[in-house]
Image 1 (tube, rainbow over the protein chains, first blue to last red):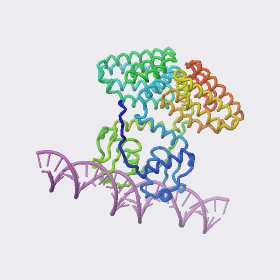
Image 2 (spheres, rainbow over the protein chains, first blue to last red):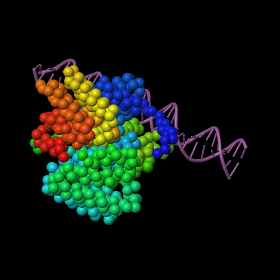
Image 3 (cartoon, rainbow over the protein chains, first blue to last red):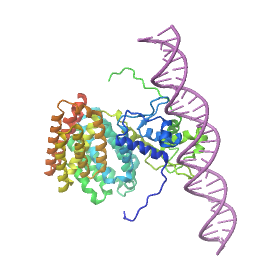
Image 4 (cartoon, chains in turn red, blue, purple, orange):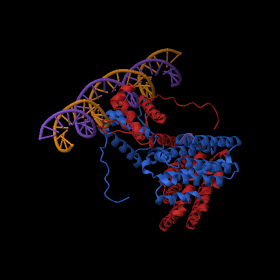
Length: 252
Length: 252
DNA sequence: GTGCGCCGACTGGTCTGACCAGTGGACTAG
DNA sequence: CTAGTCCACTGGTCAGACCAGTCGGCGCAC
């Protein structure tokens, strides 16, 4: 990454986008609060001095962002949805904008979330879930002989199961999302690495160790192995300067 | 949770929403792939047999979901954006719909993230940042004499600082976001609790312990205290049946 | 032949004005 | 006081128009 001047593509700002920003800003400032109502569309037309089409396009964006909801015929106007959304959504969208996050931040996040999920799972898992977990290991073993995509798929199933056992859908969702982003960034490199097969085998081995530790009820060890595994698996793609932060996450 | 028949509120399906679904389905099926182009708006008008306003409202939703992007004048039509799209977006949206999350999931998430941030921070913190941290403690002490809102503000500053020291903006973001949601759900109850002042003092005390542990470089202890503190602070608002999950998070 | 500039057929962004099926509050008849 | 009606208003959708931008190709000058 050289530091030569990097120019952003110039793009026009649309009217509906400026409306969205104004509403979201008002919400962030507290001028507008959940439970309140937005003026009716025709009122907004007057206030923003644009056409109703433009107002409605802005409302569609806000609606899809979980900020407001419209109901036909409701004289009170569009409803501003309970807290949740606006702030949360904005941040989460930023989450999806990968270019603002470094790879090490994403991987660190996964180490934390996955480790924690495994730790909780080792306490809460039922015997049946333990069986499921071991079945997933077998599937991973088989997938290695197919290709990296198949292995990746099986690995996803493993982590989904872990997150589900941890009884926290927020962990589950975050894990899935961030995992997808990380893989999108480096899956190609792993798949085409000369030692790709060795990497997969090693990963499988570590996963088996994790399951063993879970079976033994040793959540601490299970989480540690999982973090170490993730570090080994991904750290090579992170600049040296950022590896220290990740290393600090492995142990406790 | 009784199992009596539960009816969903019936709501009209909008035309633009059906267009969004059709496009996302096509994407999920693979009939449409990133890098491809959507037909022009006027073409879509013909295909979907709706007006251009409707097509455009659908495009705004898709655009805000990161599925497509339009560029004025581009004869190729709206662009289907790389990767990110459908699957990722769907997950992210689910994350934003807080009402599907239980309080214990949110609090558990915070215990994990905050604990991890503190652990990393205790390794990476500079002497200056340690000073900042202690300054925040003083601010929290002063805020107790004002009101709960002030205390909450100071507490936020503390956790923001921790997250910043941990050098992971993803942790920072998630912490802020989920903290806001949790507070939105129960801030009132805490503020009006009869022992509100005692709660704040106790919380302050634990924060000071955390800082001590960070100063000593004992990340493990710091994180443990922080998780315990958060459990004590919030667990009372969580149903008994879900407290076990949280308790499993405290230790390791 | 090659390069350049112009042009025109398109695009998306915005506007206007209209119609419809709903909603909910005011008003009225009992 | 209630039950029913009514009406002003809402959001959803439509048709048609204009504008500024984009891009590919045509033709001109060299």
